[in-house]
Length: 281
Image 1 (cartoon, rainbow, N blue to C red):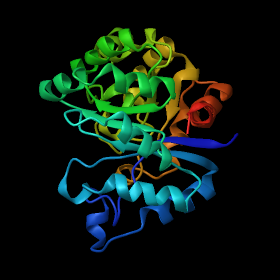
Image 2: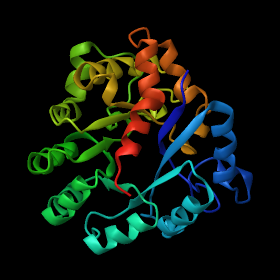
Image 3: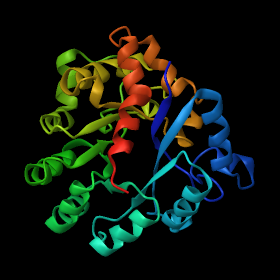
């Protein structure tokens, strides 16, 4: 297997407070933990997804800026509330600080409306520098990106966690999977949109049911629409560790008979490494 690259991890000062960290009763250094895992499993780069929508994580962007200076595998995307988007001056400061994109969490009509109000100037800046836009959203909220991509078709949109399709206990039919993912599959017509294969614990019941066969029809639908060259492995470290081991986050791909070895090499590393090489920093 060639070098791996992880398209979605989180790093928080003191650790992710809504996960297993609480059980330890003391803060942990997630960056040190991830660096060890990366060395063991050949992870060359990680897209670190900023999140600052709760009080304990409010300074996450500043923390990630410090991590860039400490670890060469850290490639952060800065969190922004769509209602308070960055200016182009803000983006230049982020660029000089080692950031490679933005992170948005779009759930509900209020956030959708705010997203659609972001200026063309901001989208043009992001597009021209080939920055990565990591998005957590679900259901019909994904349709907002159709409007944005029709104006900025080269925007590099990264859909997190398969787009969060409905949780299933048994594999849906091919038609059922496509219907459930219609709003995400519709984004395949925009050549720079991509999907992260991550968070399988959130879409299978039970969440620890590795290798998550119930969700495989979702992956097959994405493979047919986007092709292996636009799919990205993402561990969702550290929230994933409540449900499975770190190597299981990519190990499930070797269980999927519809993925070739070449597909897996693209998904597990080559695709993200190519994207990161193209970011203007």
